[in-house]
Image (cartoon, rainbow, N blue to C red; front, side):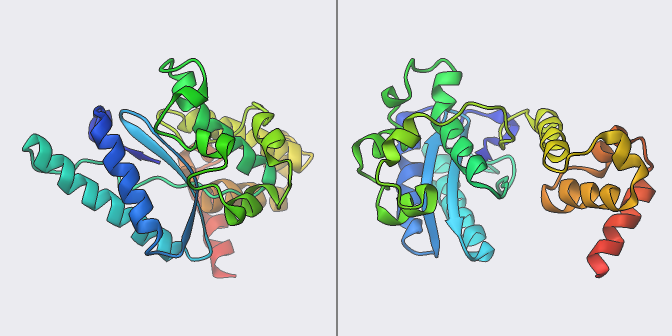
Length: 239
């Protein structure tokens, strides 16, 4: 996800959205990344990417953001940073999460009350999937739907179950959801995590090292000191 500096509306003109999409399509050909979906909103954009090389992803995002910043600053005669950060990213580790992210990205303009139906929004890949055009090809469909011939049935019936997703002002909510999912998947409770050293370590590594949440968030929910949590994270990194 990319977001305007100070949440500014950097894509508020249609031509800005078009330019950002053109840059995405241009640099997707240069780097070893596969574009799965996108949605460009007025002050942020979601891009779903598959890559086997994280460095390629970094170079891809750096290029489209830097080129867009030059275009944007020139158009409105300004200087300085355009984006809040380089970009925010979150890894996808399950088929359910992948499908949920796909759905969330396409439902962004609906949830923001910009359109009534996702197919009414021009600046996303929703209609590419509906019409089997644009970025939708056999490689993309295989990565998402495992070659399922009736992919459209799956696409149109993706569950809206609550899940983590990188978005504006959702960090605390995401942390709560991530913890809930961890507890369910490991058949445990917060009380058990506090008492079981192995589960405590596993939770800390998953939330801080893998999912990039803050130590202070883990410290607060487990009622453990940040130094105790740091100890487990450092030990795990040395193995």
